[in-house]
Length: 400
Image 1 (tube, rainbow, N blue to C red):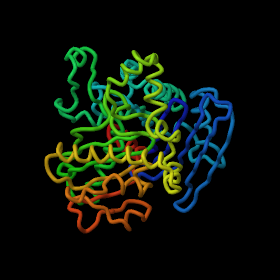
Image 2: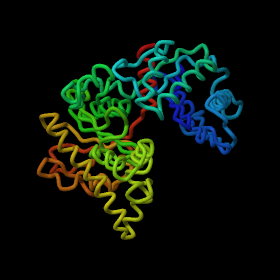
Image 3: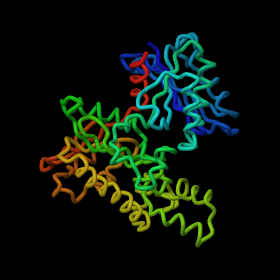
Image 4: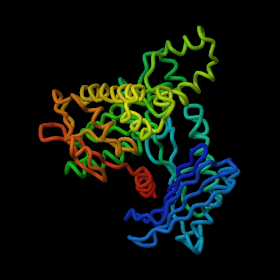
């Protein structure tokens, strides 16, 4: 079965074509700067286990429809393609960021599902509209394929009400759906499954603290294989310090910026989402650059990393309490979590009294799935690369 996974962002299209159920990747690609005169499309085809054909082009990509059409052309290209016709695609799995309370599982896309995704767009204004465009374009190009939506929020629908409700007037929940939804659920689900396998435990018995940190970041408390709490909320703004997002903040700061300093609400929204986090603290949101600055003695960059990792450390403590028993493992994943030894060390340093300690040498060694905890640590610490696209493909096949 050929399954095309599509992740449509506000200005990008990320895709992979899988042979399922084996999980073999036929091709993958990333189209960046949709709507720009200098759109960049990187397409990779894997004709054999030890071969890779790479094609990069820069050209104007007026909109997502034009971008998706070009992707479809490359899939059947004589040199870089892997299929003979778009009709060979059996399933298209779409990442959809916000499913609200309506979608607790992967769902075949219908007219009503599309309307629901549109209705939820105010809760994810940068993501759901783009996801919907990707769906509508794919329906036209891959007309014979079943279209399936995999929701980032679905995995967190197991969070109990005591954890997902905000202490604000109940009408905002009952009438408007204001609550914790959580995001990165596809990644947290994949990591939970993979950790259970690596730990040789049934998924229904595995307890974890999963730490997904990239430009966006979130943590989840996993008990008996299910999410019971997570750091992101109604929107992808709260919780950990992120690349450009503030994470947790006193709501009073918003009133102060508005009423005392005169900032309009739309400007405050932009500040907290696009000008805060690491960028706000250092004027840079690239963790590699910030780490290099620390190595050169930059105190501003060091403080930013201390703030960043202190927030992670606080949530580790909180989730130890939420799980209520010793977890099987703490898992680092995503771009920063998988690649930054410095961040991992700072995030769990000084926690031996909680049974958590890294092995400094193992932590420095990079590459793939690996346990990096010391022999003194009673809680295992792992690095497990995430694979959201493969999880989306598996979810899509699961309802086919």
